[in-house]
Image (cartoon, rainbow, N blue to C red; front, top):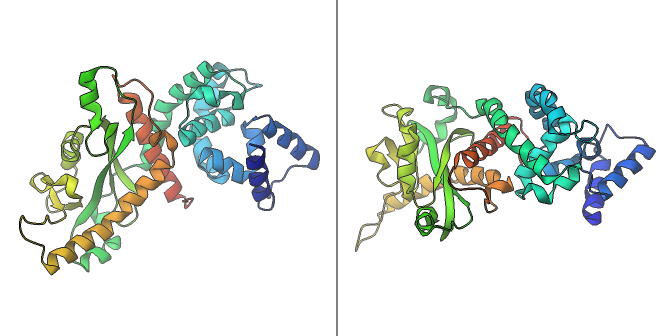
Length: 331
C-alpha cells in the first residue's frame, strides 16, 4: 500500500494545480498511510483519486457530485457523524465500491465507518443515483444519427440504428439445485446473470440497458423480454452476433451468415461477416469499459431471489460509462 500511494502521489504532484501547502501535504500523506481515503485527502492527488474511484477528479467535481449534491446534503447527517463523513466522501465511497467490487466490510475502514453503515449508505444511494443519471442513457432515433452513418452506407449496411449484445456477471452458486440450473450459463460454464445493451453504432454510447436475467436464458429471449423491439421502427436494422440468430423474425437485423452443413461460405459471404464483425467490435470495447467497474466482473454475492438491486447497479454502471464518454474522460 505504501508503494502504491507513493506512485500515485508522484504522478499527481506535477499535474495538480490546486496543490496544498507543505504541512497540509504531509498531513494528507499521513492520512493516506493510515488508509483514510475520504475526499479531503484524495482530492489533492488526482491520479490516486482516479485509481480508486474510476472517475477523474474534474468530472467528479463538475458533474457527478453536483447532480447528487442536494440528496447527499440532506442525508449526510443520517449517514453518519458529519465530522467523519462529508457529502463528497459519501459519493467517493459509493464509487470506490463500484470500482473495486469488494464488499463494504473490506473498505469501510478507509472512511472511518463500520460496514453496516457503509452498506446502508450504498443501498440508499443506488435508487437516487439511477433516477438522476439515467438521463445519460437514452435512445437516439435514426434520423439524429444520419451524420454518423456514412461508413455503414459505404459497405451496404443501411439504416443501422443500433448494435446489440449481452454480457454475463458471475454470481455465487445457489444452494437450491433448481436455482443452480436456472442461473447456470452453458456458454461461460459458470453461474451468472446477463445484462443486455444496445449502443449507437458510430459513437459507442449506450442507448438502452436492460435489467439482468438468469444466465441460462438465451440472448434472443432476453432481447424479446426487454421490449426494446417496440422502439425499433420498421425498416431500421440492428447489428447482432450469432447468439441472436432468429432476431430477424422480430426486428430488422444484420447477423453473421452461418456456414452451411457440408459446404463453405462464398467469398462475398465471408466479406460480409468480416465487415459485420469489424463494426460490432465497438460493443466489445464498451463492455471492456463497463467491466472496469469491478462490481460488474467480480462475483456478485447478493441474494438472487430479487435481481432488482443488481439490475439497478448494472444500469448505474452503464450510465457512468456514458458520462465518461460524453465528457471525454475515457481510458
